Length: 336
Image 1 (cartoon, rainbow, N blue to C red):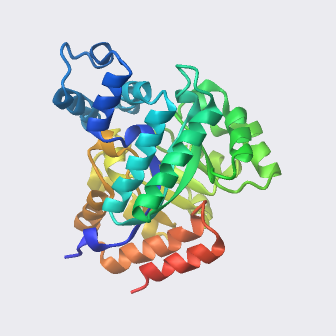
Image 2 (image 1 turned 180 degrees about the horizontal axis):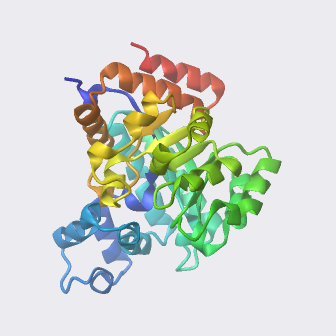
Image 3 (image 1 turned 60 degrees about the horizontal axis):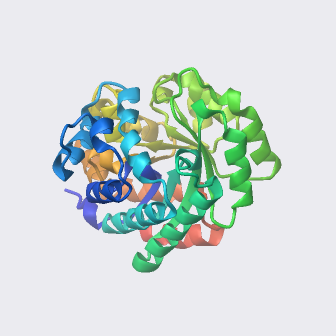
């Protein structure tokens, strides 16, 4: 039986506002006078009831219901101090999972309720990641999400280009259905024209395989979730062999993207020669961590230490925030 806690790991798909510590959410809510009762529907919220409400998302009935929990975590992340703390703690939690390199993502447009500018939000998160790296040795990259439904993807793409000193990736996130990647073609074109290659895109989570193909057409090197690609045509699956799917077993089970964890296509993708990486997505809402995701893959699909190391070695080729030399250096950690 593989000891997953001892394995070195990578993390490419972790949302800042979905992976906070419950106690941090509570403390920041009190400090910022966030109306928890109104947001959660709990008459007299306590730290315990808040954590329970947030983690009920792990047994929700739909992606929209799952996303509703973010009303609280986004509400408490409206200052540079709060963003810094959450980012620093994210890296500390990665280190506890034996993650040697991770990429944290967040949507700057979700953090301006109190007047905080997107650029200031990016600066705060970048500083928090740096502090976490200095404290733990776990290296961290930053991905900026453009939310499909807000129509500000060009602005976020420009911010990625402006802040390449601290930003390694661009992601198109939010509800898929009704918000196709093609509607954001101008943002993708801006990035392509500048030679910015760190592009990932949520696709195939609550829409079909065509959404995955559309993301590839817009230049995505990685696909977030991508479960619908299991039903894709053979040509599309072959095309995915030169891309990477960020797979999130527990999250996809929670949002009913898959009937249950045993039906998750991550093992099918691997056998098809499609690069994959196990990721958490939302540690808080999904009540998970990367050790748990690895343990589930070992239990459900019989993955061995060799399988996990091979997955991580291949995934390194798709890391956004690492030089070629650093990738080769880290690959040694995943060599038997």
